[in-house]
Structure formats: structure tokens, C-alpha cells
Length: 217
Image (cartoon, rainbow, N blue to C red; front, side):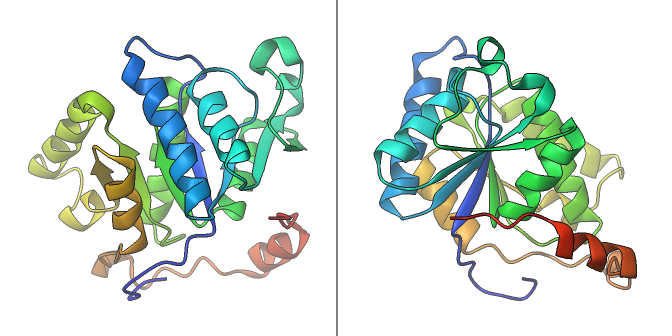
């Protein structure tokens, strides 16, 4: 929550590529992320399946003894599209429902290297943080400098006054898993005064929260 000096992270949502990428370090980092999450007794929420970097982190978490929830839209449930989900699978109707379910079941978010879907997901979650819909920590695992250009873009957006400096601090980045998780756990959000009066708690949202499925982790 805002103002807290540390976060108790029980469930982390990981976004990442459904392919392995070009560099061997990408899969190595996905496997290591899963191992570290299990060692720290943190459970995984992800987009389901067993392919690419997402499959790598899910398998490592499962083998390490932590629990795994894959959130899969009905249209992608065919095994030849995303592969077999590791452990528990939650079916939803749409891609938006998938992101919303992952958001509700996670205390924090990490993006491994990936493509359009990965960037869309991490930016979507970050824009919600900018709007003060949540204060959950968000991080990029910047393997081999994969996200250097994206981070430069964010810095340019601040320079050109399309992004405030407080909003820029929403996205954390680190080159190693251990450093990134430590930063996520110690994250303190910078409150943008212009957004501090926004109240997203409505009767409709309270009703929706009561209807959301709870994660059995």
C-alpha cells in the first residue's frame, strides 16, 4: 500500500514471451526466476501454457515447490496453441478478463523479455498504477539489456513532458532476479498530487470484487 516501507509478496504475476527468444540467457533467467520465487515461497500467477519463457518460469516454480496458477482465455485452451498449463488453470472469457484476473490474484508484477503481449500487459498494469487504481510494485527483469530501449523511451517521455517523474518511478528495473525482487519488496510508490484525489471505489467496483474468484494459493 502507499506509504509502506515493504511489501509482503505472496503471489507474483509474471509476463513474458511465449517463445524462447534468441539468447540462451533469456531462458536461463526465466528458469532462475522460477527457482528464486520457489525458494522465497512466492507463488506464481501467469498466462498459462508451457511454451517459451512463460513455460520455463512456471515449470521451475512448480518443481521448486511453490504453487502455480495459469489464467487462460477459452479461445487459447487448445494445447497446440500454448501448451499444457503447469498445475492449476483458470479459464476466462476474454483477454481483458485474463489480465483482470491476473491483476486481482497478484501482489506484484514482473516482465521477462517478450513481445507485443508482454509489453502491452506491463504497460496496462503500469497505467493503472499511474491512475492510482493500485500501488502494487511492477518490475522489468532486464536480461542482457533487453529493456534498455524501452527504459530510454520512458526517460524521453519524461523529458518531453508526456510522463511525470513520479509516474516514471512506477516501473522498476534490474538485471538480476534477486535484485529485482528485493526492490519490489521495498518499493514505496511516489504519489502524484494531481491524482491523489481520485477515488476508484464505487458501488459497482465493490460488487465486482465480491464476485471475483479467490486464488487458492
